[in-house]
Length: 437
Image (cartoon, rainbow, N blue to C red; front, side):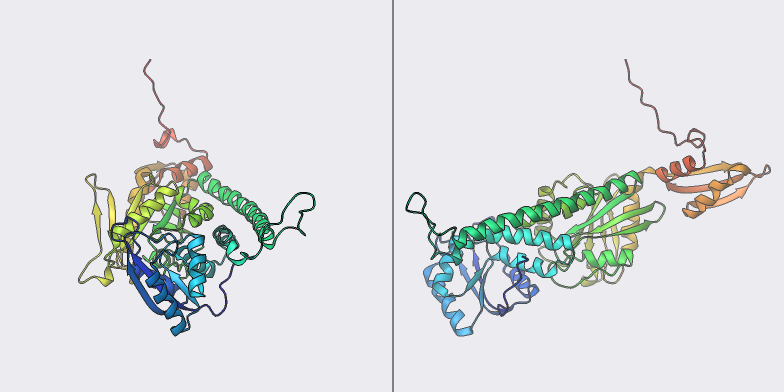
């Protein structure tokens, strides 16, 4: 029951209304990008300015007549509004212009429907679409009256509208059960990573900031990346080796957008859980975008919605190749910790700095010391080489191996345990807690 786009609905009249005093103003340029990303051909762009939306038609009657004339003259299939419309507003507008009306939320849902590839992604989109459509069912069944009850007044059964609502309710319940199963599987995978002490780093950012391009550059993956909004929808996870630290899991996630529909945030909660439970967020920013500060605020807003406000983050200012004479760089805070990296995921400039910064931020638990291994302990030496943790090694007169190492403390402790060696001897035993009486 996946809601696909209606055939032939690819020629559209675009409508944007500017509300100068409103805190929720939409971007007309971004709206056009959304339309193109949906594979729709913009026939014309109608704009208006109002102080508040008209409660019945959202726009004034004069502008509504202009929209109707444009639909007829341009033979448009659909009218797209860059705003969230109420079900009654959609119905009222359609009655006047005699054409299908889709609001901003419906357009974004349509793009998500086109991008979903995995079983989970399709379920999430369908859930959001059904919840959005269920409030608009009455548009198609206004000619049907509710059957009457009581002796002598009973109808022939439930109306088509009620039947549709019941079917949608059953479908929502079915989808939620399937998503709960996927959620349990995801939680199992996260617990397994947690037990093995593998850190998770999640890429977040405004849509089309270059997250998937950076993901591909860092992991040598082939995730679909394109210069379009919501090119990535389904999350992708890859293991990544960080110099002097070891393996992490890098997660590529869906991009955020201004006023992301709440239904989508709810539907994609299991996917976004990877972000909420990450050890570090890489906030990827299109530094060449004039609206980058506003976009960053929107990302922070969504991160707050999914409970990720407290997760440590590193800003990655991407696309420096689109700036004049700008070199890769790392910005640090007063404590000397990296807070921002300037790079180009497309050309690869500065991506090594991103890896180094990740290593610094997650590598507080890295040990760098010289250890001495007796001849019967040289199995540990081989394991250290497997971890690429050996910086230098020599042998003393007694035949002991003197090795300079650098690696994650947790990995070193695991190797000691595997080789039945004492943590105390190598100075990595957990410190005891003392409490004053």
